[in-house]
Image (cartoon, rainbow, N blue to C red; front, top):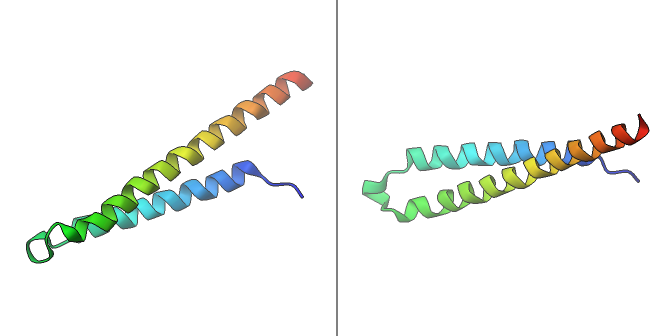
Length: 76
């Protein structure tokens, strides 16, 4: 069984971007005057987690490209 790391990382990156967008919308639409700052806690945490996920997946993509470049150099 072969796992395509690039496709997996790209899918993870896209998922993280989508989650960050959803969290940002929740933050922007939060009514702090009525609900207080407590309503911001969960979307802020999700935004941070999505950012970390996006960075991790971006590093996987970068590493995959470096490895592929090295393989091409070796074969050439």
